[in-house]
Amino acid sequence: DGGITQSPKYLFRKEGQNVTLSCEQNLNHDAMYWYRQDPGQGLRLIYYSQIVNDFQKGDIAEGYSVSREKKESFPLTVTSAQKNPTAFYLCASSTTIMGEQYFGPGTRLTVT
Amino acid sequence: AQSVSQHNHHVILSEAASLELGCNYSYGGTVNLFWYVQYPGQHLQLLLKYFSGDPLVKGIKGFEAEFIKSKFSFNLRKPSVQWSDTAEYFCAVPGSGGSYIPTFGRGTSLIVHP
Image (cartoon, rainbow over all chains, first blue to last red; front, side, top):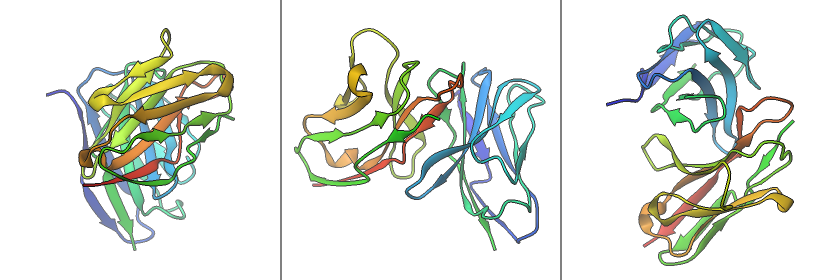
């Protein structure tokens, strides 16, 4: 089955620690995205990548970092600089940046 | 910058009622419009999309949306909702200033009572 996998589903971290969220797709899509979903705020774009070894900041990139070393993988690191990291994180991919997006199941991160 | 407005944040309906969810956006340069749905406990998934052609588009589960260019709107409709339509609905439109990354609205939470 083609799709997007995100792991883990739930993640707990102590404040001050960096944490990396995994996102893998086997849809052969060029574009990948990371969103943050908070209640009542919709999806806000953190980073996106149109092609391997290239990525761009989204609207709320501060405190986050990404890499795109392989077409299938787009991990997101939530650094200790992110002031309010507790949230639901969604990864998505699409054939092009103008196309429909396919979403993973999400990772719920709780930082205490 | 592009902005997307979903006017109804919470909608509560009884089964068989008609539904219309509003979506308005500020920048209309490129028209690839989407509605996504997030059912409880499930992935966010595409409900329907408009790229060109007939401005009335049909999606899954009896949903449709109408693109009205002059009003910068892409409202979602369903003539008769079911309990299983309980979900969160997001409108997405292309960004402005040369960015085509979809900008999402804040979402509408729909609860349908049986």
